[in-house]
Image (cartoon, rainbow, N blue to C red; front, side, top):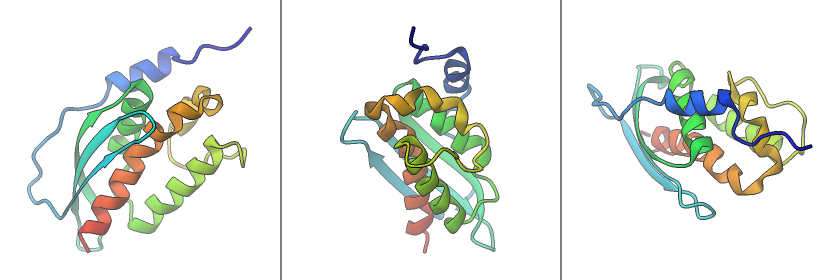
Length: 140
């Protein structure tokens, strides 16, 4: 018997995603779209004096996995620098592709494990991380 794809934890996490909010100062912005599933995220970032994330705002049009991943980015992006986000993106990509067993240190990401068997969901999960990285890069 196969395990369920959409667990209660994934659905709760997706439902916890906050609405887009206005930032005091927008340092960078990115709009990214997944060609495989059509999910789309517009993400704006405010950085501190050390170029670490101070606040983010995102508008998310995605499936439950994309929303859940965006909620994790929303909850744990503050204080992260470009290199930390880039490393998380690579690590999570490899984990989803089953190239490695460790998901990395982004809190809560292992809740999305049911999607590892569904390549069609990988793009939506990675999209918020790509958006955050692109927004930080656009602030340079």
